[in-house]
Image (cartoon, rainbow, N blue to C red; front, side, top):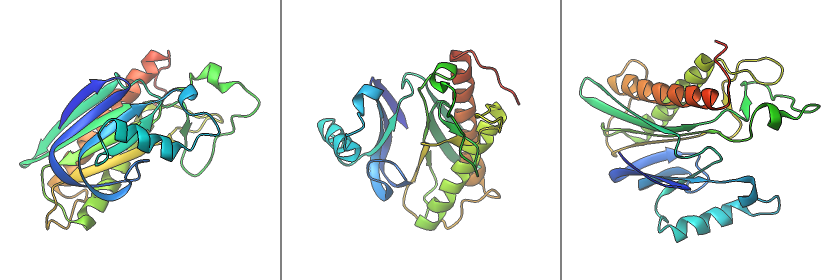
Length: 225
């Protein structure tokens, strides 16, 4: 994974076309791609009447990235974290940008009425993750890999101890996005008992944990966990 920063873009090159699964705003679902791009945005970039999907597709075309996977974030893309791990010969890499300004606790939605939360928590950030494995995976295993990456994201956010309005510990944000990639292959499993699951989980956990700590420091918050 080669990471190149040209703000407002962050470009992740996987080195070769990979099988990719995500719920990204550009080219979601099962895809084949070599690149995963972040586009940093401000409120001014996304007015209320904007067709975001059409706008973003045009941005990706202008970037000559029609075949890439595209992510959006208000987090400063210079604040990114790349972690590489290896377990029993299987390598995992995870790239993350992390902000918790619109954090939520799963199973509920925070009530932000009655207080100017943008002044309490600066309005920038969400969690975007791109993770890749060296081991060729089937589409079923790639789906399991996405669940492992999601678990790792959640565990890292809980460990950060950030609380949402109402006091619950955050488990993520309302606009998180995760992309997982691997060479296409026949390996049907990527669970917690496997080397690939361990490597992927550790890489994502560490990348998100580092990003959350940096975000908390940048706005003067400390972990409550």
